[in-house]
Length: 348
Image (cartoon, rainbow, N blue to C red):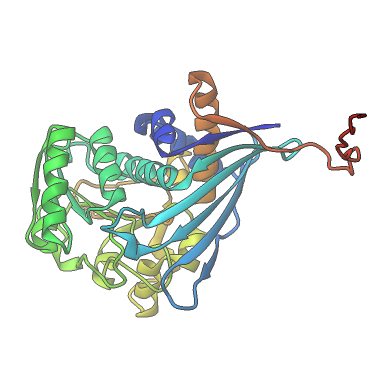
């Protein structure tokens, strides 16, 4: 049996942002309709606190796509040649369980996460939103800038990160690649105040976005925190906003921004207005008025990875991209005995 290997460059080639946004819309709507199987992720933390290993399985019932993402998370990698999230997405077919493809997980994660934020932005932000603020300047910042420009008429980008030179370089590259005005902000507050859309894509364990900075009509995508012990938004920011999530169960177990506000008694479980997929499916209403503040808390779901892998696999075969390798998959047996090679001695 042959398995297709898609490295980082190949994934970017076969999983374009626009197509992934639409794919995430269908996938999250399927989640809302109960057409997926999505257990909570399993996170194994290293004893020294240096990193963690995540295991995220998922199954799409209608398409029969079965898969798992295995991901190492080392936030200290920021600024080095290594991504903070590294690993592989394994795609299986649902009839016999055969392995079909192995994809670079960092590129799949970067693209599909930004695509989900773009979907949330399309559903929740004002249609005329043109001022974008991004807190963070890593891989997710790059894909989020692209994704926001895909769904809204972004005119100006303000970026902030704790290392000014990273913000300056990010602004320079964004202006060049996206054709927009992009500037490095001196503080997180100056980046956020007056923005229409804010994306928090940091590795911070403590809040980088304060509720006092929010203005009427703003939409926020909170992306960087994915464990209960870290958060990017303070309690007031969560309390002031109408909160939407990718999945309720995940948020109630893993959403540090939500859990911190709940622990302090500022909100309850009913503060979650709905899932993004429920808006797509027409079961929940999104933005109600032009002045309200909306918040999308992103945690990332395995079904997003599986759907992305299935799409990428099909497109890679069509475009003849990637590398095929022999990889077993047939029934194991003892096989035929290996004959020992013998050498005949020549007669003298």
